[in-house]
Image (cartoon, rainbow, N blue to C red; front, side, top):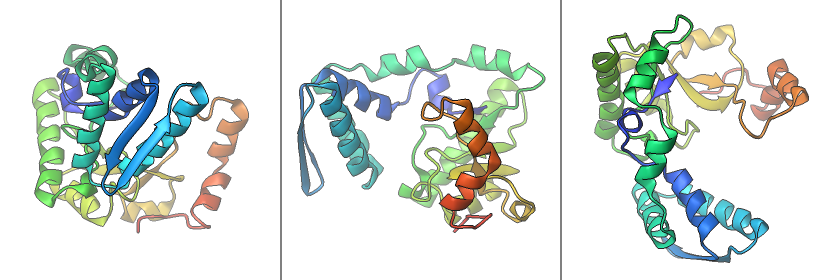
Length: 228
């Protein structure tokens, strides 16, 4: 289990959930994202889904500072309490400490504030990694040897972040690049792939397909190792 320390403290921002709730409450979306103005109706479930998808990916393509500021404006307009989301949905330190005592649970780090690390200067990325590791170790009195990159796609974690994770002292680090583990990953322990079982895959057939590895080989165009 990978811990974002600010979330454990009841702070930080679950900005993607703030955006979901804002779109859920608003009947229309109108916001500037860089040079683009995104205006869309959001009265029906279908309109809300379309507006969310359009806005989410437009924000993801740009700098994270702009993303967070834009979501904050929408949340304020919709009366969404971001702090309440964190307090309600995230485990606190006492709960995480209880989990850490379970024999089959290993606690890893997931940064201080859950930024898309590749969008920030190297010093910021390194601090997010190193201080989250140190903070968890101090709070839980357990070694933190493993790391997961927030968001974890190539636009959020690349060669620079892989090197920083090793430099900070993590033994392994996981991306969200889809794939299975192969012997060649022994040379890329800070760029490991992930099998994501989430709300999009809620059937035994889908799970079997993912565990077979076939969809990932197709996704990665036949490559077993995807670390570029």
